[in-house]
Length: 265
Image (cartoon, rainbow, N blue to C red; front, side, top):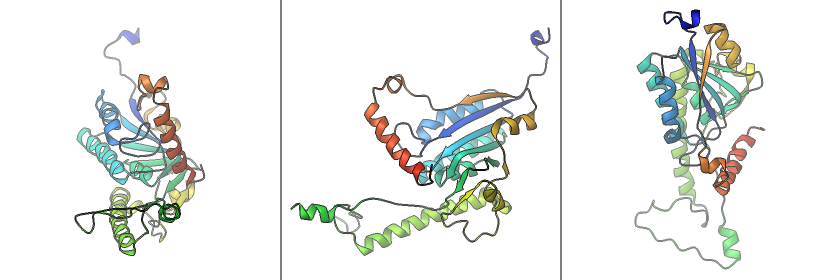
């Protein structure tokens, strides 16, 4: 009757947070701090988990949302004294790697894509097309820097210079985060912060991950065969489940698919 004994030792529990998809503010079906806040808070607060595991499969996205999510994870881990272990699936690149670096340890598969420590800004220019169609773009501002990188006007060298300066600042923040979190584990690799990506064991060689391994066997080896997994993730609303937001979900899906495609996935 051991199961009725209130003094019997309970098996350890690991809270597992699923972080799947692109990172973007206010976009349906994608990762952002507002959506994930209650999920992360619950994972750290329900009972006393032996550890929190992050299941990561993300090509990145918003640097601000990546930082907000990562900071929330670190704050709770330190407040509650709970270790955080990340497990990379297909990809943890760019903002996805920012999330992985929030963990105390990072595991990946032999074929996982890891890294892309860089910043990108992409768009389209339609000024030539509009001109050929007889359209004239009219923009009036108060403040010389108010209109920048307008896709319907020719690109200006000064705008490009300003944009590159902004990207460099964000890149420096990214590099500082990785160095702070990974410290002496990082190899002296000149390509580490160029946006280069690394696969499996190569990622381990340069210090971006700690070991090759998968969630269940790694955590069973650490906490015992009887360890329990309590899973947390973003739940779709009733309207989403029944297709009432089909158009928005389709657009978000196309954008996310494009992000994954950058890494051949």
